Length: 63
Image (cartoon, rainbow, N blue to C red; front, side):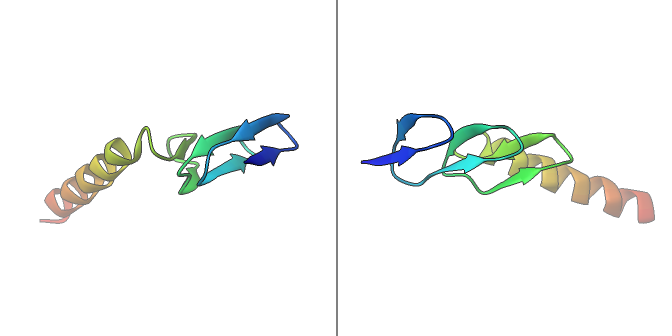
């Protein structure tokens, strides 16, 4: 088992500590400044949907 020195807690596999959020995130991808949150296991599908909507709105705007 791995231990996070910042949180003083054991962390599951594939968990990383985010310095911006100051907490451990499961399957952390990155910290997104657009949504001011970490993209990880719990919200990856919502973030991907957000990117698709941004792309569709941008295409609609230019057409």
